[in-house]
Length: 191
Image (tube, rainbow, N blue to C red; front, side, top):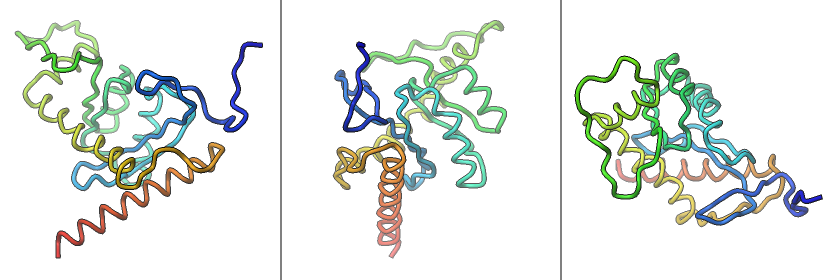
């Protein structure tokens, strides 16, 4: 009796966005680090990002014919099993196992890693190394601008179609338009 249902968009779900509840879909995009080309995309009605990393990694492989050398993902994607899956496929993961407060520096690494360190502890140490900080910091300039460009340049604030299958098609079209813009601009820059 207390269940809520959206009669306008029954496939979407209530999700948290910027501290507020919204009726939404969860859009995913995997982006290459050189040209910000979207190499894989997906839309679901499940809010936690964590469960989307393995299927997105496989989509990258299906679309590109190979797994990436490295995978960068924020804390929402952390799971011990994801590290194992990446390593089994020859992908070096850089997945934040937790969030730091804004502006808070990570604690320094001291000494050798303990032998009984779990996957989360190993990843914390890896991301605090000089190389780990350098690689992981690239996430903010690889994937985050893509979503900003889609929202600002393409002026995509919400989906125009209803139903998850139609929204998936719309998201594919949006991602394709983003890629065409990137390729067009890269071509102009080369001339």
